[in-house]
Amino acid sequence: MHPPALCKQGYQRFGIEFLWFGIKEARACLFAGLFFLSIFCVPRTGLFGIARYDLLLIIALAIQFIMVATRLESWDELKAITLFHVLGFGLELFKTSSTIGSWHYPEAAWSKVGGVPLFSGFMYAAVGSYIIQCWRLMDLKIRHHPPIIFAVLLSLALYANFFTHHFIGDYRWYIAAVALGLYARSEVIFTPYDRPFRMPLLVAFVLIGFFIWLAENMGTFFGVWQYPNQIGAWATVHVGKWGAWSLLVMMTFTITLFLKDIKKRVHIAQ
Image (cartoon, rainbow, N blue to C red):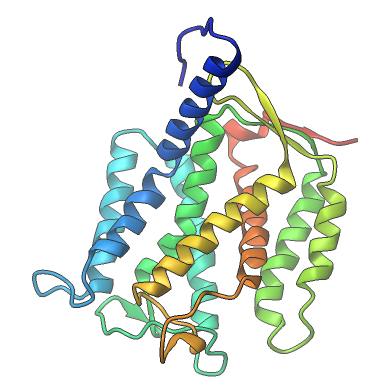
């Protein structure tokens, strides 16, 4: 969190800052990393007579409990992460319903509700946990963020479109165009070591969305869930999901702005 002063310059400084950036990123991904490692390591048949989906739920709850008990996450942050879980699980229930069938969870488990295993909400919570940890570890600050009410309305439109596009037109690209205008000037300031760097906030959303898309490809490869085109044989998740995840990251980011320790780090554009 607070490394000693660095007297190096040139390539040596860049190398140390890049290494420290990687360390902090790995630390921010602690929940997501451990959870997805569990997804990849737990066999399809489960362990000790416990079905895979049930075991993944137990593991996710244990990781979350340990992080709160060791103060790696605060109770306020846990409330936000729980909201991510609820929103994600609600989306899963809708998308996997018999009338929609966007994807499905093929295995049996005691912890399935409406055909959706309870652990699935933790995949969305993992994204929220990563963003919250980055605020602290990277000492994030935001410059020229759009007015909060606009960001909230945009997030509501994004979330609603995940449902409504099955019945009316898909307006995600129109919403993305609005987001491009709202966040065009927004910058995120992050500090890997002791010197701040700047990045367009939209670039951060797209990069995070890309890595979630990669994780989704790995999850479907291990058969944890399947899209209709993956039932006969595994295929890459459509690249359009990268854009959908980037938009979902934007919505997740907006929710974190309401945490009291984060509000003061956001400069609202005038």
